[in-house]
Each structure stands twice: as C-alpha cells, then as structure tokens.
Image (tube, rainbow, N blue to C red; front, side, top):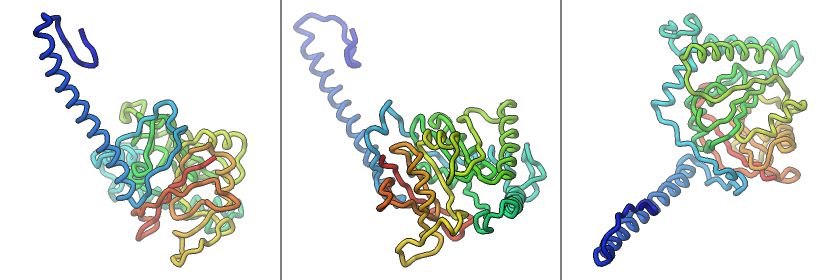
Length: 328
C-alpha cells in the first residue's frame, strides 16, 4: 500500500505503531526540508532582481493562470552554444570566418555594416529622418541576461520591436525552446525585413539538416508599431514579453524626462507608449533599452519594475534596460 510516498506492508497491530511513528517522523522531516528549499528558491529569485538592479516583479495572479512555469536562468555553456548556432546564420565573430558552416565569407561585422547601409538607403527612399534609421543590435548573451532578469515563463510569446536582421528572434527561440511558444519580430524598413527573411531561410535550412535541434517557432513581420494594421494589432495583443532597442527612435517621438543625467538613457517614448498601451494585453511585460515608457498621467497604463545596466557594443560604454508591466 502506498500513501503520500509512504510504502507499508501489513504487520501485526503491536508492531505497526512504532513503524508508522518512525516513518511519519522521517517524512515530516523531508517535508520540512522541501519547504525550506522552496522558501530558499523564492528568496533567491527575489534577490536576483535586486542584484540585477531591479525590483521584485509585481505581476498579478492572472498572469500565472494555467500554472505557468518559470524558466531556469541560462548557463554560460548554453549561451555559448546558442551563440555558435546564431553565428552560423548571421556571420561569426572571427575575421577569417573559419568554421562558419553557413556564411564562411561573412563576419558578424560585415553583416551589420550591410544592415546599416540598407537602413540608410531605405530611410532616404522613405524620407525618414536619418536618426530614425540608425541600425543597432543586442547580442545573444546580452539578450539572455535581460530575459533571465525579467523572467521567461512557459507559453510566453516573445516580440522584438524593430527586429532588423532577426538576430534576437532567433536567439530567443534557441535560448528558451521549452518555454517560449513563439518568437516574433516586427520591422518597419522593407529592405531590412527582406534581409531577415533570407536569414530565416538559412535558419530553416539548418533545422532541416539537423544542425539546429529544439527551438521555438519564429515569425517575422513587416509593420509600423506606431500605426499597426490588423495583423500587427493581433500580434501585439498576443505578446506577453517584448524587447525594444530604443536608441534608433525618431526625435519627433521623444521627450526628455526630468533627470539630470539626460542623454539617450533618459528618452521617454510617448508615441510608442500609446501604441503598446492600446494594443498589448494586461500583464504583458515590455523591456525598453535606453528609453522609457510613460507611466504617469495621461497614460498610467504601465508600471515601472526596475532597470538593469547592460553591456552593448553599439551603445558603449553601457546601456540601460528598463522593465515595465502593463496594468490593464
């Protein structure tokens, strides 16, 4: 007979009592140890937010409906493995390209230089301000640091706003394959979007050849997050976790916050705030790199959770990642 993990065979009544007593004490001790371990894990998670410079998340209970499970933090070996796979699609960091199965003659910097040129030409053709088409990119390891700090949960739907070549979309899919149900990217510049589709095709070829194993499904979309069409509105409504690298947003949509520090780390993005407030679901989390969402009247829709200093070559010496939760 088995009850709550305690196995017993039938014994005479006079021998049964001490056996039950010993086993009950043993299992009570085990339960106490398990509870202590659980409390320790909770405490470490809360501490992790403080270590990263973030406040503990205040996500409402509705966010955890369906027994959502928190992903473990990525390890250094896992990040390295993902970076190697991403390099096979988007170009490696070696100047000679040795060992790169998919793009032997293309380095990471070569690809980024091409993306910068494409962004500039697209901006001129679309008559966009030059500062709105500056191309910037976070690395795989930096993305892992940010998402680990924010917390990735089972069935999260990830969105990179301003996805460019699609590096973060691919990275997120590989970093959290058992937790992200979908990894998406939206890009406003048509030529960059076309480039990302070419890289996605390389990605799919690697999957079919077995080079890439388990990963989340990926989707790429051409669209304007400021004026989303029906398809993009639906995607925003489905998103639970989003990243936006705000260094390239137009000055026309930025106003300075009341801070003595000023500079790119203190940009408030009212137009982006309004669009996300109108279209994203309750409890969705948004991570803004080097910018702010509006959290006060007339848009008390987002709650600021905390900030995290990160290393990013495109914004040396450092950038600030800020986490927000949509309240309603």
